[in-house]
Length: 308
Image (cartoon, rainbow, N blue to C red):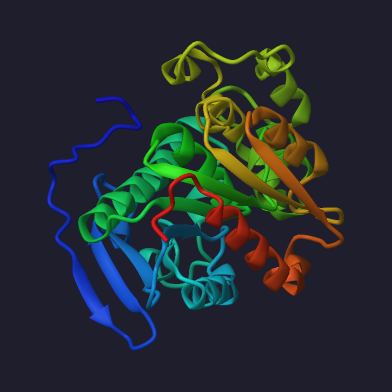
C-alpha cells in the first residue's frame, strides 16, 4: 500500500459527546502513530441549523492556535456551514502531557517527517469518510499556516474536496526551515545532529534540493516519490501542481512566520487560485478574521451546484 493510501473498509468506531454548542467527535486513526495518544482522531463539530456546505478546518502547529481559531468554526456555523475543526496529530489530547503541540513535526529527518505529514492527510481523508456517512452536502477544506500545507496535500490526494482555502501558508522547505523565526529550534537540531542526507545548514539544503531549480510538474503524484531527498515527498509545492480545485489564498504583507518566498512558491504552484493580500502579519491576521470569514463564505457559495 502506498504511503498516502489507507484501508477504507476499517470501521470508524465513532464516539460523540454533545457539549452544547458543538459536538466532540472521535474515531480511530488508520495508522500507528508515533505516540499512543494520537490513535484517535478528535474533531470539534459545529453544526449549522440550515446547512448548505461542509468545511474541514485545519489549525496551525501549536496547541495555542486551537482556541482562537475555533472562532471561525462558530462564525461559519452561524452562516450555514457545518464546520469540522480537526485536531492535528500530536496536539491537545492527541499529544503528550507538557507538549506545546506538534513536536514530532519538527524533526530534521525527512524519512521521519514524511510519515507524520501523511498521517495527518489520512486523518483529513478519514474525516471526509465520517462526513460522508452523515451528510450529502459538498465538503471543502480550509487550513491556516501548517494546516494550509496539509490542506494542499489533501486537495491533491482526495478529489471529494470541492474547494480549498489556504490562509497564511506556504511551501518549499528551504524558506520555511532556514528563514522562518518559528523554526529556530529546528535549525539548532540540524546544526547539532544533521540528518540522513547530511543537511546541517542552508547550503547543504540547496545542494540536496538542486532539483527544485528547474522543477516541472511530475507526470503523476506517484512521481513525486521518485525525487530525492524525501523532503520533496511532503513539500506542498509539489502537491499544489495537482490541485485542480478552485483555491482562495490569503497572504499577510508582514508575515514573517511564512516567508514571502515560501508563500509565493506555493501560490505559483496552484493552477486555479485567487489571492487576497492583507496588511497584517501571521498572528495579527486574527484582527481581520471577520473579513477573512466573509470572503470565505462568498467563495464557498459560488461552488458549482452547491446544495443550498
